[in-house]
Length: 175
Image (cartoon, rainbow, N blue to C red; front, side, top):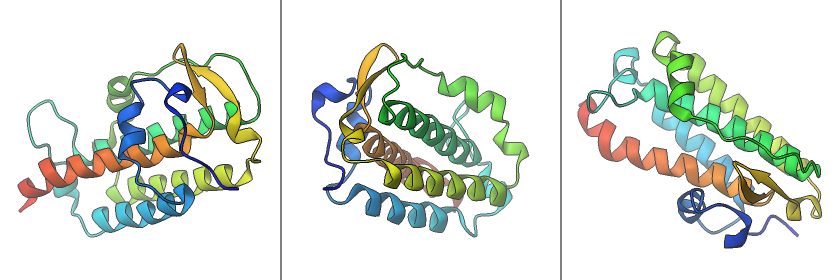
């Protein structure tokens, strides 16, 4: 049957922009293709380029790559819990606190990229493991309903959003 796009009552308004950014098509194939896109974007980037910030107080490219890994882990964990029928409410998270604690600029870019690749691969394996019935499960995250089937689309759209920001605001400054 495949994973179908979630209905608006299956996720919060805060996640709606990410789901809207997810292109139409087989979400698992799109997630796999996006992994190649992220890899191509960061491969060959120098360490100084990867610490570039387009404005004071903004994340570096390394911070953004770490954020993609952190967010994907959280979204996949939510999918695991909800997909397995766990109805325990899941808390929100503060991305800026995670970014500060991660200290991504102190890590090698190759390590950050390998981390994202492993995270995306693990997400794909989890998503492939869920049954058709599991995708319909709805839990609570950050005080709002969230379906298991919304989460692959959130992963896809969230990364697409940040890739667009990188292309628009970061890459022009790297020249």
